Image 1 (tube, rainbow, N blue to C red):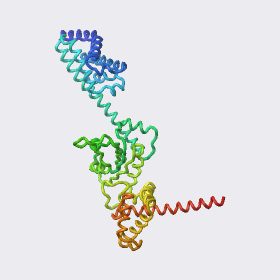
Image 2 (cartoon, one colour; image 1 turned 90 degrees about the vertical axis):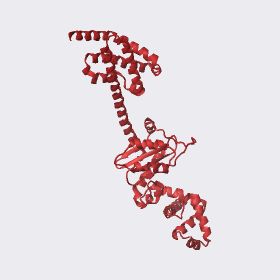
Image 3 (cartoon, rainbow, N blue to C red; image 1 turned 180 degrees about the vertical axis):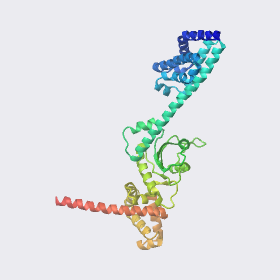
Image 4 (cartoon, one colour; image 1 turned 180 degrees about the horizontal axis):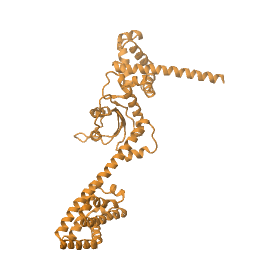
Length: 406
């Protein structure tokens, strides 16, 4: 027993004497066998060298006292600056460990079989320690990304964007480009964020996810589109994307805001989606998902200024600018319960003329007055447009009177 202790003491003394040579030999081998190591900046190569030196020192301490494994193995990576974890992947770290172990094993292989087995056992402990370090770093990064993502989504929802928003979005790794739309629904009992992201990638969109209590918000942006069998890109429309994401939401209404040109404009889509989500119960048979613009009457009744503006600018003004006959025909048709004959009698025209004009209305504004839901949308737009026109006329008359008095 004493002889064994004496032999171990001699081995420890020998290891301490050659530790510097081992570190140097390891650095040389790294440069020879790992191309990515030689391409690193000098400061990071030096940091890697410190890790290698710490590993050799730690092994000697561990060989002296194997019970010290839990903390000595982790201390190897404490010498590395934090940015080294971001510039060296786990795979590269394991390559470093393998090279270091190989060099050390070559130098001590002839010393004793016990020492060789100790090196192999210790290399396993260091590999586990490396995996633990990277796992903790990834967990911390994930928590930070989740907080940053929540901040970005909240900024989009409130419209309180600033010059730092683009850099925050870039930090999240946003790959979206082009059009963006916001989807608002209820949070499921078990939210699987990763499943949302996987599904979104398959659909050719990037996604930002925000959870606000019982409300779940997705910001969808065009990413690399999926391709067909002949490699033709297929940009799915946002309503179809929303339909495919629908099963992952909780029960309740699901509202899609209108598409906007870029992420910086996403607050406009968010405003419409949130306003639609708040009044969706007003449409008894609302589909799921439903587009926010299909809820324009309910939103307007609730006092949403964006809905009122949309109805006037997308329906009333285009009709007025195109033809007063179209506007008067639409008014009459809606007032007469969508009856062609009653409309024709009121306007002193043939029913086929009414049909033609209604078809032209649909071509000009994209809504079909013959359907009950779209008729409600069009009638709301006519009411709001006529009220706005009258108000504008009164303001203009008042301004002219003031000018004349001066």
